[in-house]
Image (cartoon, rainbow over all chains, first blue to last red; front, side, top):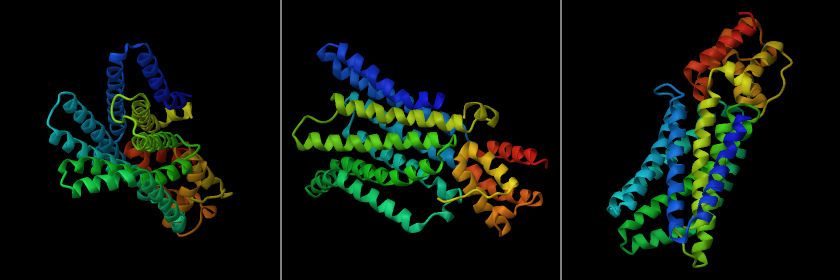
Length: 262
Length: 84
């Protein structure tokens, strides 16, 4: 029951954001959305710290959650620097390292099944097919923006390295959706399905975010921060990282308690 | 990711314990995979004498998913349930 409440938490946060946005005067609405996005990042950091601290130093899952927490911290720091009109290079560096941490942490979670020694019974052909499908999907979603970034880089716009790195990270995380989803399905019925399921849900929402962002940009609509649809998706996807982290912590609590909640 | 019921009471008890974390499907897969790896035979052949070796084989997998402390608790519970 409490895992289901955890799964509903991101939607509740977005509903709260919607209410605050709707009752705010026009000029304050951008501030409401910015505050909601940053609050979600703080929550996500807390979730990652709680998950990492459920494991001992040096353990595989502790490193994975620490990397995901580092990603959120660095992207939060990037936002603070941006809000303070800090240097673009500093924002770019924080974004690049943050995105790198996200890919590394997600990659570790996606590989946990293999690291645990459970992949031996899998059919390699099936795994490759699913990965290829995910890679094709990632290319469809991020291919256009990636091409635009490469053109900008070739045109001498050095700061285009930041969106380029971000789009490469998006593509990598989208490809990793496949093993995350496979692990979630394999763990169905167990307490550990929750962190993987919630992590997968968050990444699916980032996929949706990328699609919506690309459509808005293609239609010439204003994109970036301060727009309700994209910022709501940011809050929702980020809050799922909080839920996943807390679910991870609960899943490795002493088993006497686990039996009581499963 | 395949697995089936073993029909062996010891294997099924261990799989049921693992299922709390891994789900029933992967609980069975884990017992099968690590029985073959540690003992060179399937879970349907498990005897009480095989359990320590199987526990040893399960340890790295459990540590990956639930950490060292919880792994030891799970393995101890398995031993207790089987009267070891």
